[in-house]
Length: 128
Image (cartoon, rainbow, N blue to C red):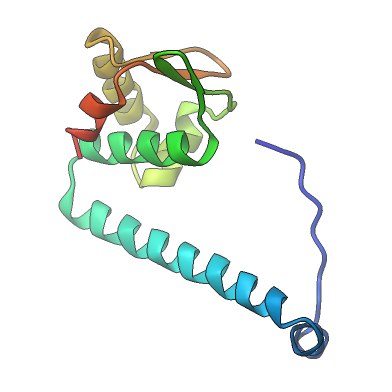
């Protein structure tokens, strides 16, 4: 991931900022609605999808958001532990480890400590 700086506003300061700069309000609304959609999707996934589908969905999301296309593969240069991945999809570390191992044995991905390389995104999408 990347370093981040955060600024804290109280409600009145934020309202004044949005009144002075409406484009900030539009961007904030887009970001918040995107997060809400993702949260709703996570709830649906937890209720309706098995662990392979949830891991596949997470890999697709990460590939679209952070992936770097290199020749015939997508490189996720992120240092997320299996526990962190599991927390993102409401699963256990052991389950994520098993599914990632399954994907590796099918030559869909390769994992290392700080990278996930996706070789066959279309086949991962088939799991969802």
